[in-house]
Image 1 (tube, rainbow, N blue to C red):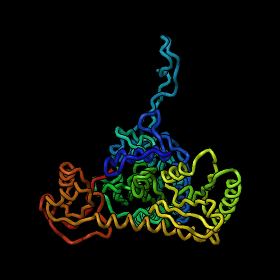
Image 2 (cartoon, one colour):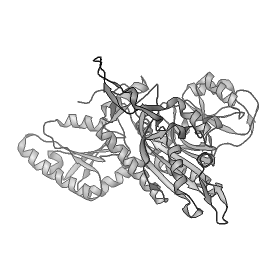
Image 3 (cartoon, rainbow, N blue to C red):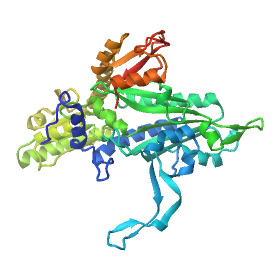
Image 4 (cartoon, one colour):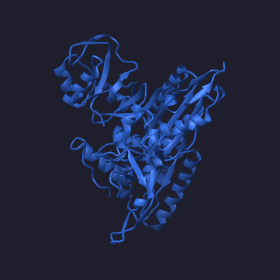
Length: 490
């Protein structure tokens, strides 16, 4: 029987960690700060990856792969970039081990020191732009639209499964363009793709906007982001898209011959999402009974559980369940028949509830007589009895309803927990209550830092569709051009 989880309202962090482990998504690795993604968790990530990859390819992007190791000199070429990532870099200094002559086991061979130290990629702008210098010669080579699915390493001190680990999986797009306008359009287009995915597939509403200057990606001229609200009221940055201007092209001398025969620097973007989306998925929909998955991303959309007593009943009911399984699979539904007779049906019910399977279909002796089945929704934990005639179409409709209902529920939570405030005391109270707060800010990094220090809330973004009415800064009283989004965040 599945273990009982710590309630969310008792200890949200503990609840999250328990779901990730108990629902077989991931576990801590023996390598500190790293994780093992288990098959069920990886199946969800594969669903995410396949959908996003299709979206990228529909917009003309192609996949490639670049080295894991980056020469240290490359990282040093863009000043803001190296400053932004220097503290997180893992560095390779030697290429060989040897046996310790004093019996101490394997030690680093001091004679095997690298001529140039290598950085284990924290992000790939530098190695990719050094490569693009060789690929781009003329305007005919542009735009260059490349994506990479890879792992990266950022040496984190405080880690949490999926949300922040030393090594994680992601995709990183890196594109080169002929004009500034094309690059800006690409930056916005990719953010819209991320929003379309998170809302349409993850059933997770997001707020789109610009990051403040101090929160921009290291080396970018502008960073666009999508911010999502978790059930505890904290924000989670779910995706970013960066307009890099000509900074990396300048650093790596990436020029192209224009139609007029002139030499110009290309314009660049980069954009990415990571396995952090797995953490967002867990925290957006799940409950005290376990994981809740939107059908579009569930590895198993429907689990079929036969209920019987004795061999004769088992043979007849399992045979009917196999017919149902075949019908659902033929309708394109991801289905699993659990006919394992070593486990009781109650155990199976609890297990698939914990794992967030959207629909459970049960068939017992009475159902067999009536040519019907019991359907149990994971999201609402409600049950209904449905005829087996036309069951595939009925289930497809119900799965669509579950997907829609999850998005509606999350959207209502976001709306009801987003407030506007105009004085400092109300601001502190609402932030501490786990609200998204729309408030005025005077536009200075000093005030931004001060607010963060005093409340632990940060400016998540300047929403694209936010309130542009001028006002007075929530902290300093100085003039403010618009409201921005504040929240505590992961």
